[in-house]
Image (tube, rainbow, N blue to C red):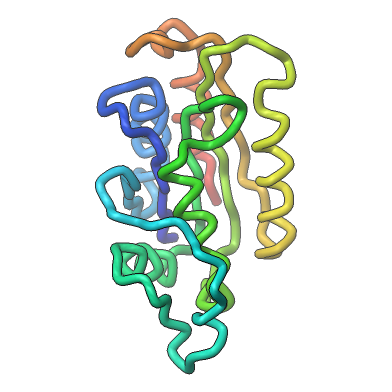
Length: 178
């Protein structure tokens, strides 16, 4: 299986990176895994112009790196969304990429499943609620299976995640992907 991870953290070596690394260690034992750090790509927000719906190639009028991500998505069987939680939502960089799936090219993707990896500094019980709602809607839209989630609260400083069970959970989530 081809697994594509969209990593939304701009902080290199941070808690989200460590969580993704643990998932990759498990998943790469059986599958091909590619991590796309969206912070390294220039992706503009969707303008909602709908030009992509009006041309034959579904090309976006914006000339940025999203075309590279569309290409990677076209080969993915599984998508993993990984993000720090910034004010109860996904990182802006990752949100821009997700919003660009407004393009009808999304209908050519052959995703079978998705997983979610989130890291937040707060410990509120409802910390992930808004992201989980969006995630469930995406599962329904793409008609894909939920492969699992690792949701980590109370990790703020780089490396704090090492003091939680989350790295073990992410490893086993990756290892058990079928």
